Length: 102
Image (cartoon, rainbow, N blue to C red; front, side, top):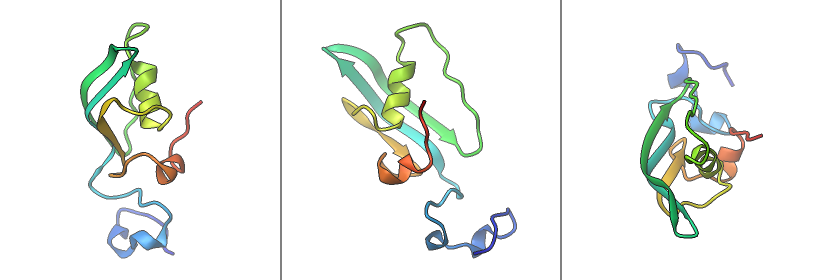
């Protein structure tokens, strides 16, 4: 398998690697994401796209939903409604190979 570079992305087929980390899509996408706990809405209609190669920080006061969003992205919580996509797929076995949560 050739090494990844901007010059040879077209030569590498998705089945050459376990997870295709290149391409034009978003790495993380949230579509109309909502989460409620005991009837209290924590996240409401979150629409978010994070492209590959970007470092993103979440800022906010305590109780604003930062940790909830991270847990939804990591598939540690289930959305009340809406969806999270990692590399264009719902969180699962493949996303756990490329995402870590401490």
